Length: 126
Image (cartoon, rainbow, N blue to C red; front, top):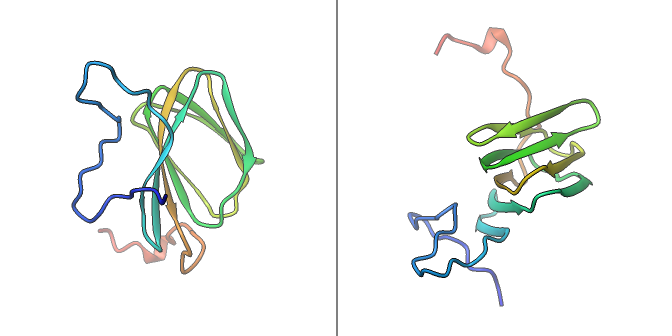
């Protein structure tokens, strides 16, 4: 059975709230997928380490709850709730959650070109 992904204008509850008094445990799940974009809610249990891996497209990691450490071969950072970071496509990275964390992963599939910072000359002040 294929995963149910959200349709345009369908509201997605990132925190997986259940209407019943018996909440279902939060799980990692792909929320939305198109040919260009994918949103995945990652639920990382306390002490969980996601080993180094890479994906072809540009991605963002947005910490929704908890805290997550992100490491690449050249640098590392810690995201707290409400913080976001971007990684270039094919950049190896690993994740570690010292306590349970919920992260929104946004993948850009088949980007037309690799990410690069805007040049100062390209900045028109807008």
